Image 1: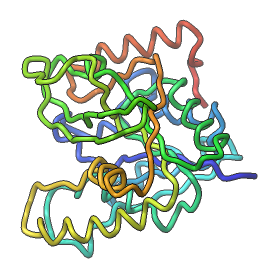
Image 2 (image 1 turned 180 degrees about the vertical axis):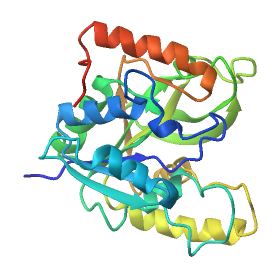
Image 3 (image 1 turned 90 degrees about the horizontal axis):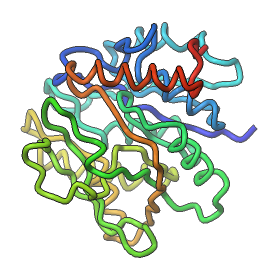
Image 4 (image 1 turned 90 degrees about the vertical axis):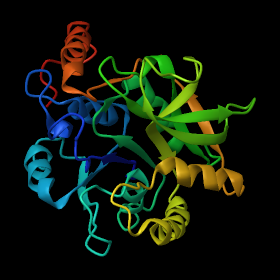
Length: 279
């Protein structure tokens, strides 16, 4: 059986949310992540890799190890910081990507644990990775207006595209809110739903070494995936094609987002998009 991998970045601190939002129950006994896991399995992914911190590994093992269908391979990867300078914050999504290098050796998808992407996004990514023979990389793009919170700031990767719907550049924008949007609301942004080939790991490792040299004394600097993506585009190493989806993104960036997200998920269950019991 062909290994079809999807990795889930779940090592975040949840500082703006105020707790472990990756497994925070929103509907029935399920977190947003559970709906992403369900969608991934439904469209054909058969290898799940959870990127976690040591402190929460036990939580994820208990939650997923024995509950998912038997044909699904599950791995847990620690976003390890033991050989890095001591700090309170994780080193960012680029470091999370790098933590997969010894676990995945085939084309794979990568998502955030706390974002709802919708079934169509998973289907498009699965088919692009495993049915497209070009072996390029991919991302799911969303309009900025569909990705903002009513209750505070967010970070988004602003995407500049060419006429082939390929990335020319991606810029990490932080502290975006509905009150201070400095770009058109129709701007395409990345919500960290990526499709990579394993060649990405070598480039990521080189860039992270350089990042550490420049930021070894920083308590807050983060190494973001868009830094890796932008470098590989500028150096003509690979291309990233946008996968268009009409599905609405939503997430619980802040606790105040939760009632709206709960209603949206309950509506999808009532429309039979999801069963009341996922597994």
